[in-house]
Length: 106
Image (cartoon, rainbow, N blue to C red):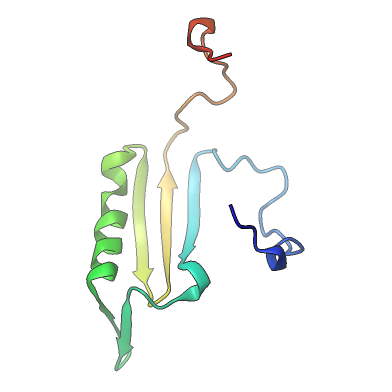
């Protein structure tokens, strides 16, 4: 995997000590690679989604179908990024648990 060396010294905006698997409200930003404008154009102050932008919208709206513990709030799709607010109702998964010994691969 290629690592962008310019980002190594970048200051993290994450809250130290916060468990981002915790339930709560999260503001999420997803950006396209190299900030390419892939999702549409802005005309007269309106975002006009292209096919890729419509696909992003569909995928965003499908999140609760894949993750029933997640509720969506407001979101906006821009030409090269998406902003959205999600609520994670409760943690899921094997947080702080080890696999059963019969499932271990080593």
